[in-house]
Length: 82
Image 1 (tube, rainbow, N blue to C red):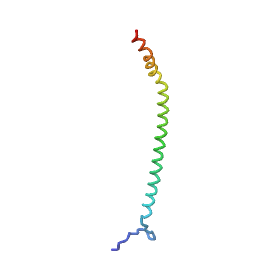
Image 2: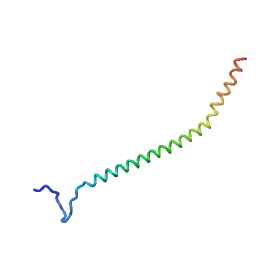
Image 3: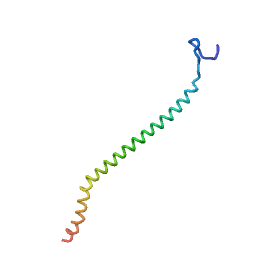
Image 4: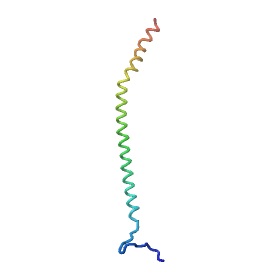
């Protein structure tokens, strides 16, 4: 017996899989970098939308909290003095 690959089709060449590892390494690094960039971009975009929404909510609901506190600060001393 010989220690070589079995060739089924006459004239077919057997190539070693050396180039596959390099291709997979380069492709893996490229796709990881692109995937990380997409995730960072998505998180940044969503964070901007959340900040804008919370700012608008604060502007809408802020006076309902601030107004009673300010009026209580003005009203309380006059109630205590009487």
